[in-house]
Every structure is written in structure tokens, then in C-alpha cells.
Image 1 (cartoon, rainbow, N blue to C red):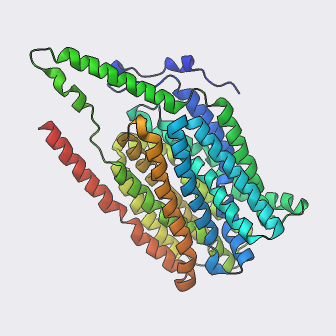
Image 2 (cartoon, rainbow, N blue to C red):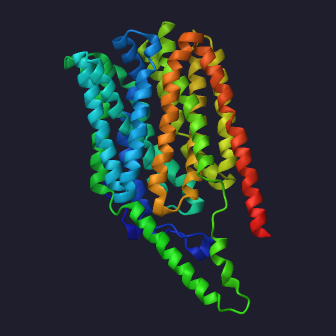
Image 3 (cartoon, rainbow, N blue to C red):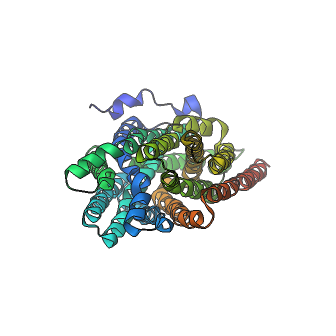
Length: 448
């Protein structure tokens, strides 16, 4: 596959004069192409723990109440992975950070397979934690897609990277039977099959990024930002000498006056904890009412597809309407999805699938809008470390949702879990409303 060169993409890049915005870097097309390839192959690894993690725990630990432990572990691994990968990206760039993250995820996947084959619970738990680094990397890659994007294209750029994970992510749950057959043929329990696919996907993604993500988008973004700052400083120095002193406010006019990192973080956190909790216990809920792995694979496949397929629409809405209205819409949509899951008849796979699809759409709206808010609020000089910390919070929310989900279902049932999640989802609304008020107030003061 021939990647578009930096030169070939420069012709289509907007200029400052044309758009009034900073120009799109000529390397952006190449960067997005490489990220899309890596996301396609790594998407298969993203779903292994989701599809069979709870079932593995229930089988190996012998308790439904402990079925949420795998989700808690690999989301906890995502937390550690996001922290380490963010720091490495901050120091060395996106290529070494993301490449190492996928390599560690592949190692964890192999460890899960070995643990299941040996019926070794401690090894399983440790390997699930390590496997989480792949999940963290898959999500952190979206920031790399936005590194070189102009502000009016940021939502669509990061959503393209998210969309690319769809192919592997949707295929993964539907390959449970096939990968199970392969595992069984190798003398390994069938439930380990999806982790064989995860090991291959994460290793392939590491190879793609390590060889093709050149030049590094974060390095380019920092150089571009420094160039703009220098140009602005020169312009200020020149115009400050004008009689009207028009250059004195030039730098201030460029200051972003939108919602801050905390707002974007809370939008993503609330969606993550509810979505993970419901998603984690859905396979157990289906199995408890006589539905087989085929039905489980279909429901989770549809859910994963809904998590990523709406990305272009979410990105377009963020770029055109703003991130805060989209964030509010994510809370309302997730509330509706949780209510539908809570009232779904136990014999109706279709209704439950519809609820999980709606939950996936809501999660996507929240992730894209929240990511756009965080990206706009942080300069390239400290973006990677801040983004890593944000995704640590995202992983903590997922770990909390996964861990509590089994306990809540054991105590009150699946419907209690879902309806409680509906209430939590609505907390996005006051967060978005407060940020909108603060933004309007800041702009009013600035205009005055």
C-alpha cells in the first residue's frame, strides 16, 4: 500500500487566508492513513476481554459475583497503560509510545491464553492487567489523529481514527466460534480463542506504527505551534509600534476561551462508567437466561459497531455545533439506552441488542466531544501527558463500572444495574450546562 506523501497532501490543505484558521499540516493525510491501518488491525484485540472476559472469570473463579473482575483488571491495566504511554509520548513522541503500548497488549493477550491453558488463575489476573495496555493504546491513538488537525477539523480527524477500529472490533465478537475452534485444535480451551486474535492484532499494530508513523505527528505539532507563536510575537512587536497599539491584544485574542480539561474529562468519565457496567454484565445476563455464545457475540458485535461507526457523524456535529451540545446529547442518549436495557424482556435478544446499540452511540458522542474539549484546552507542549492522565481517569471509570457491575447484579439484578446507570448518565447535563455558562461569561468579559 502506497501512503500519500506529505507533498501530495499540501495542495488540499487550507491556508490561513482562506479559512482564518491555522492551516492543516501537509503531513496530516499520511499520519491519518497510518493510524487508520493500525486501528483496523488492533480493533480485533479491543473486544477479546469484553466478549469472553466475564465468562472466563465465571468459569475459572466459580462465581457470577466475581464476573466483573476481568473488566476491572483490564480497565485497570488501561489506567496504568494510559499513564505510562502518555508520559512516553510526551518525552519521545507518538510513535514509540503507541508502538510499545500495543506490544505490551500483545504480551498480555498471550499470557491470558497461557493462563487458560494451564488453568492458572493468578497468571490470568496478571495477564488481564497487562492486556489492558492494548486497550489504552487503541483509545490514545485518537489524540494522535488530532495533533496536526486544524481547529475546525479536529472532531472529524479524531473520529476517523476511532472509526478505523470498527472493522476489527466488530469482527472480533463474531469470530468467537472460529477462534474457539482454532484454540481447541491447539489443545487450548475454547474461551481463550479471542485472545489469540488479540495477540495477533496488537502485534501487527505495533509493527505498523513502528515502521510507518514517520514523521511523528506530535513532534510536528510542537514545531508548528512554536512557529505560530514566533510569528505572532513578531507581529505583536511590529504592530505595537503602530499609533493605535492594535498589536497589544493580538496574543490575547488567540487565547482559547472554551471549556477546560475537567469538563471534557467528566463528559467521558460518566459515559464510560455506565457503558462499561452494562456491557460487562450483558453476556452474563444473556447466558443466565439460556442464550448461547452466538447471541452474545451478535449483541456485543452490534454494540462495538455502534461505539465506533457513528464517529464521522459525531465529529461533524462537534465541528459544526460545538462540543458541549454533543456532550449533552450523549447523556440523554445513554440514559435512554440504560432504561431500555433495564426493561428489556429476558427472552428478547433484539430489544437488548437495541439498548446496547444505543449505548454505543451515546458513548461515541461523549468520547468524541470530550476528546475535542480536552485537545482544544491543552497546548502541544504538554498535550500527551495531559491526555494520558485524562485516559487514566477514563480507565478508572471503566474499572469501577466493571467491578461494581457484578456486585450490583448479584444483589439486585441486571435491571437494577441498568436503571441505576440511567440516573448516572444524566449527570452529564449539569456538567455541560455549567461549562456553557462559564464559557459565555468568559467571552463576555473578553469582549468587554
